[in-house]
Structures are given as C-alpha cells and as structure tokens.
Image 1: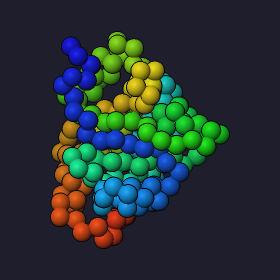
Image 2: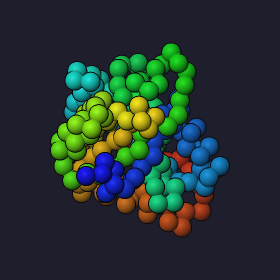
Image 3: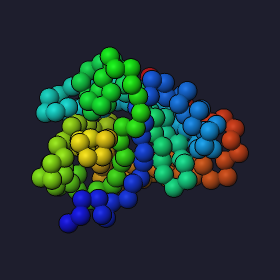
Length: 179
C-alpha cells in the first residue's frame, strides 16, 4: 500500500503568531477567503506524545481554490505537535501540517507508525471529532493531520468552500465563535 497514494490533501495549515493578521495577508496576496475564526477551540482531551496535555489553540479557516487553508496559533507553551516544530523560544513560524481524511483513524495511525511516522498528538473536539498529527518531519518537514470525515466536519468544510463561491473579497476575516 502506498502511504498517501489514495489520500487527497484537504487542508494546508500554517502555524502563525496571529491568525487574523495571517488570514488578512493571505487573502490580500492570494485572493483566498473569506476566513472564519474560532478562538480557544474546546477539546474534551488531547494527548501529546502519550501524555494528556492542555492544547489551547485558535484557528482561521478559509478556501484557496480547492484546498482549505488554516492558520493556527497556540496560546501558551504547553508541549504539543505545534511546539514540536515551532518552539516558543525559536520565534519561528511556518507550514505545520497538511490534512487528509481517513476511513478509520486508529488504523491510519497504526499504518503510519508502522512506516516510521509516529503519533505526535491525538485530540478530540466537543462534538466527538478526533484528529491526529503524525510526525512526518524527517521526510516531509511537517506533520500530517488525519481525521475521519463525519457530518459535522464535512458540513464545516462545505460551509467554508461555499462561502468562497462568488465571494467579492469583502469582510475577509469573520469570527465564528469560541471564547
């Protein structure tokens, strides 16, 4: 089986210090958007490298052609898949992950681990959507995020894509919720 042969890239995500500023800049430079922000995304739990950890983050999601773009920032310096690539002290930011849909998350995690891509983080949102980051930095320079497509997730992807259809460039960054 080819590792990513049958998996389509659904999202490209960048770790940034300010999601609104990054979304506005990307929209101005590349015509992407509109972007929808979620602050302090609530999770039921998050395991980083096998240890339960707080993962307080905010994201902005927008459409760029056929691919969703995410800008993500982490509040605090707790260990996470974000901080694995971009420690707070480094002051660096950039490409963090590409996301794919998988049929069975646990099976995909095991398949990637068997091929030398260890699980970096496994988290779950309040609606029960689990997402995992596998560490592909040795070969690709970034993480791979995986999740099983469910009604809520697919609805969100469709919402973002539909907002981009015929978008006139106004109001490029919009708040969705969070605290």
